[in-house]
Image (tube, rainbow, N blue to C red; front, side, top):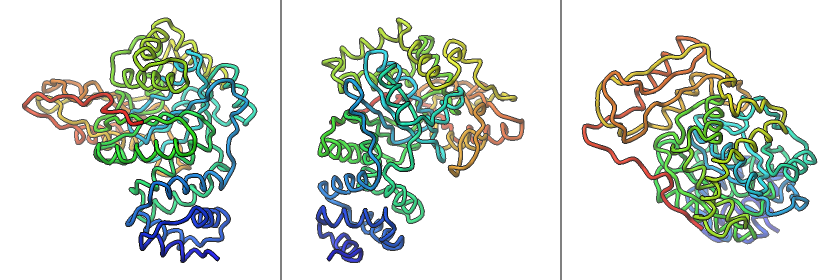
Length: 435
């Protein structure tokens, strides 16, 4: 007979677990038959001793099986999904999902809300009035009808992960590669997509602080997905500075609109989004190579099809499609303040975490899932790493509800900025691909 103590002991002593033992333990967590202190002890054992690749695959499948699984078999074609490991100014979903759908793809995406310094896709969508709580029937019908739907995850998906994640947050076990990989992939696989593109961030504003750690995580997640019969590929991209210039829900939605309506296509956000969209088209077997797919993506944007598809998505989910061509109709902050450079130099760093915290202080994010957010507030960066700035140049525009919060956010922006007397090479849009 298997016992929780036996499972904890074997992991502590680096003795590989069997699939049966992992299933017993995870099922026990979901059914509250394994005590929380036992689950916490096992998490620390994993954090210190690790898990083998096969154990991690079994753990992922056991967490998937702890709850409901979304059945996408009624969707025509290959349903695809994309997941980012979190970042600041990362609005890629709102850009690539309409592009892929306009190319004939089927984007069936369930997203989460932002927490801490990272923004959530659902919060950005709600800033434009979209409804994100669709029924399963509505979700599937919309994907079949227009090729794309982005909705909130149900609590019935992967309940064991919900328990483990909350424990990891308070037991110093967040930064475990097997635990991160199984948590991410169990949720993605439970959502039913047959092809998954991962955007694994590294740097100041990411869970993984360096590229080597991000590569290890990406490889494990790709192996898990392939081991469970899915097509998976991962991009590694830097989060040492925000991906987009906008931080804040309406501001980020507005930037996504500008990219899709063709008025802002030569930015890091646009270039990364286009490359990710191209890879999704290959995974969906709609194009044979990333180069041809990227060419098609650019044609879809320049022809106006991408903007039209975003309008269609907004309309289908009860929002205001006119914001695509008129982003100024999105919620606007009452107070705008310029943050100016105190000295001249080359922009060496724009600390993404600090800038995310600045947005948090303005009310653009939340510390707890129940916290309200202000869709209008945030900040818009005016320069990128590598730019030359002169004393007095505007570094950022603060969009705030009042002068007091704007002043506090301005101090955070200046703290995030580091200048150099020597020229600085900007980071690559995407450092490498895994899978």
